[in-house]
Image (tube, rainbow, N blue to C red; front, side, top):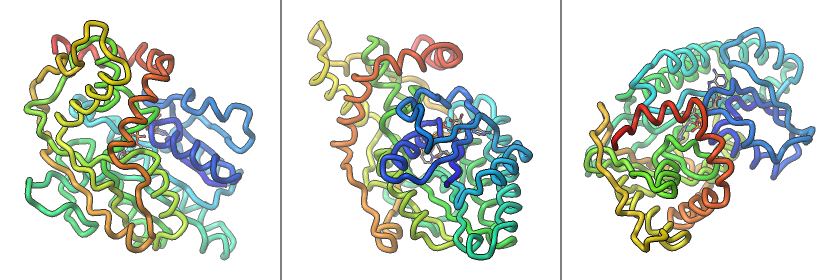
Length: 353
Ligand code: NAD
C-alpha cells in the first residue's frame, strides 16, 4: 500500500486514478478536504476496495501515526498543500500551517513509522515530496531554465512555504536518514483543475460569457505540463529515483499567459462556437498585475530524462485540446465546484474585471 496525502485535489486525484488504473497496489488517501479537495474527483473509485479515503490533516500527528501503524504503507507521497498563489497573498496563515508545520509533523510521524519497520522494509521505504518550480524564483527572459542546482529564491508566500517544506524534507534525510525524494514541477493543467487557476478559469469564464481576466500585459512566461505526465514522472521517481535527490519535472513548454488564453479561445471557437459568431478572444480583459508576480519560470528536465528515462507523452497542443474538451464534457463538475465558498472568493477577485 501507498499513502497519498492531498489525493482529493487536482494533481493528487489524477495521481490516485492513474495509479489504480495501472496497478492493484492499494492507496490510502489522506485529505483534509479544504475548498480545493473534492471527493467527486474520485467518484470512479466508489466501491473500489483498493482505495481507502480518510478525511484528515497531515498536521494531525496522532491520526497520521495511527494510519501508518494500521496500514503500514511502503511509501508516502505528499501532495497535500495550500496551492494558490493569489490566496497566499491575501492570507498566508493556512500556507504556513499546512505547507510548513503540516509537512514537519508528517515527516516526524513518518520517521517514527520508518524506524519501526523491519530492516528490509525500512530500506525499501520512500517519502516522496511533491513540490514546485516556483521555489526557484523568477527567471530573466534570456536566462537558462532552472536546474536542480539553482538557488532557492521564492517570491510569494506560497512559494516561500513550499521552499521551507522542501528544506525540511532535505534535512530529514541528511539529519535523520529518512529516504526522501523531491520533485519540483512546472505548472500543471488538465482534468479536475480547480477553476481559480489560469487555464480552467479562462475556459469556464469564456463559456459563461464572462470577462477573461489577464494579469498586466499577460507576458508572464510559464512552463506547462499535462497533469498525466506529472503523474507518470512521480511514479517513475518513486520507482527508480535516487534517495535524497531532487528531480525537476517539466514539459519544455514555455508560453506567455496571453498566448495560453488565445489558444483556449481558438479551441473553444472551434469546439463550441459562440452563438453570435464572435471569437471568445473578444472577452479578454487586462486587469491590474498581482504583487510580486514572477515574470518567467522554466524547467530544465534533463536530469529526470537522462537518469530515469522519463518523457512527457503529451505536447502542449494535444494536452490543451484534451483539457478544453474535458471541461466541455464535465459541465456538472464545474457547476458543483463553482458553488459556495469558491464563488465568494472569485467574486472578491475579479469584480468589475
Ligand atoms: P490542490 O490545491 O488542487 O490540492 C491540494 C489538496 O490538498 C486538496 O485536496 C486539499 O484538500 C488537500 N489539503 C490541503 N491542506 C491539507 C492538510 N493540511 N492535510 C491534508 N490535506 C490537505 O493542489 P494541486 O494543484 O493538486 O497541487 C498538489 C501539490 O503539487 C502541491 O503540493 C503543490 O504545491 C504541487 N504542485 C502543483 C503544481 C500545479 O501546477 N498545480 C505544480 C507543481 C507542484
